[in-house]
Length: 602
Image (cartoon, rainbow, N blue to C red; front, side):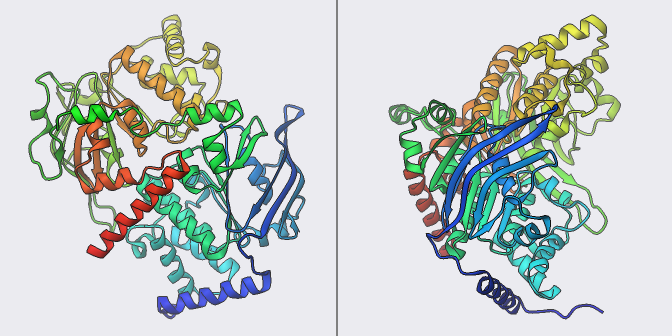
């Protein structure tokens, strides 16, 4: 028999009563109270018949309503220090020291006791939503499961609360998305589902491990706003683990800087940003890209207005560019995902007019689900074009067969967002780099080996690394391997799909520098897809802005960054966090005022 339906307001009342009962029995937390006290926390792993120290003698306190950011490069120990609080270390890991959560010692706690703490007292937003969410259950069920595990709620009330949480984190059509599986959502939407699940029980302590890595800046701003509201509403303390110093400036009250498992600097957000003392902290901040940091006011004053293509302009962009053969030309292109089962066909992009000239880098920005990756995949013939005409290097790839496309494959390359999943885990990375050369040019033996070594040299990796497997490399090293493989056939067009989004700032800076060097060396054209406008600004001569399947604005980088014409572009730029707490506070207040005015008008 089906469960009786329950009104959402009544469901919310049931949930509120459950929260009240939990707080009454667990003790109320007042803002300013110390909720977590960590003393001499050390984390070690048994590796190669010896103990490897990942975190050494870490100590700090966290108060209710406070955000503590832990920053540092990959491998610095920032994630393991927090995972040890919940007993989420792998079997080879051991934690010692003390972590006191409101009088409860977490280090050494039994699994059964930890189950009562996880989700209810402490929640975690993990970095990789695809691996953290169960692929065989709908996302709505997984949120409901969290609620019903910790609260006495009937299915209708739990579903109503789950839909409310999904709406809170800006999931489109939450009633419909409730029944979707993780693979049916975009990366940003999956991250939002994880955040909704973590917020479900309104925990005292929220550990956010790179919570906005996969999110575009507008959604990121909304999520950060939600997290700020959470700490105000239930006096939650937040440990924020991130490599995005703009996010740190937006959120953090205090900052811990880690390097090689040790705390090298600890202080208020203002002190760390304004007066960093340790050389490593200074280096970390120097690696952060700043939006429009090289723009001179005098240059802007003298610069004439340039024509910016906007949504609704039916003229192909080829009319506004040079007469040379473009590396990529989309003329009134539409890309449609066909009907699957009960789901109707979906027009992911339409009326797309975009040109990338030879040797030019064009940045493509927009929200998660706006169609950026769809355009990138269509450009390398991984997705068919339903309408319009798509030409790459003078070759029309519209409606071509697989056989007809084989010569075309040699002229394009693609760098994927996640190099870990795009590299074959069973092959040494040298074989992955050499595979395109073997398949398309028939290189073997010494000639193939020499070419692979040359490619490793070009991405500044030691030649001996060719015999290592992907899991043995860091994220930045894997991304360099991905770039080397994409350049193996010396393509005329490269599609870079979020190539730096998963990298910490210092590694990102090195990869971007490498990218610019390679682009100058090889002279390839590139469509650089990213949600980070500060990154796109560094590498692109022009920027195209995408919103809900349409290109709403295309223009020179300087014009887009400093004088955006379309309201969506203006909102996108206002949401970019800057690594300065005082400046970020002003930008946040301004953005909130803009959104408030939009709501009043609507």
